[in-house]
Length: 193
Image 1 (tube, rainbow, N blue to C red):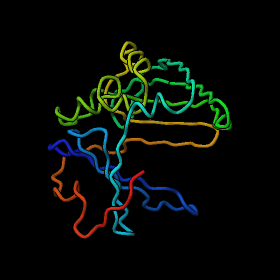
Image 2: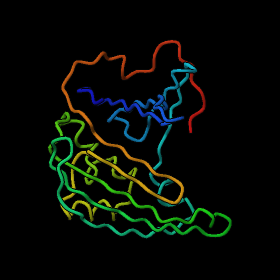
Image 3: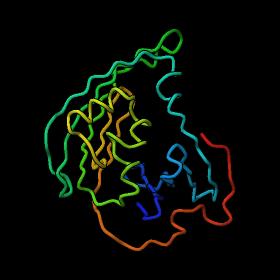
Image 4: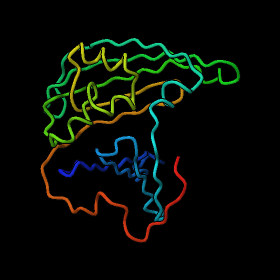
């Protein structure tokens, strides 16, 4: 959910025993793009998580090399998208070498997704602030040069241990209660990630 006041909410489910169950609710604010609030409705708790992009790319003890390629144009959920593939070869040194991996990320980006203009500057995967959370500057620049810009309509990531798929299934304009983008009253704060 994206709100005109530059706030957003993501609800993710996980599959357990063949059924989807609510797993994560995250609230974000475009005015503070390197922070998210995770809600645990079952425990009535929340945590505030700070994202340091330097930690994501520089201090993980790895040497990562990236290969970025443009796959082509596709239509997803009615949006014209540019499909790009990013292959990250991560080589960790010393005791962390068991985490060596080759991660493949596929992105389908579209500038046509109708999101508030004020939010667009943060959410564009090739030019916005969120790009620095997911990729280094070189990958971001390559995406931009290939014309792979816009809101993420679909995201698929595969590595030796993890597989993830996120996709827009519906876009609609609605009125949301402002409380949808706030920590509910009575929730207790716990330590973040």
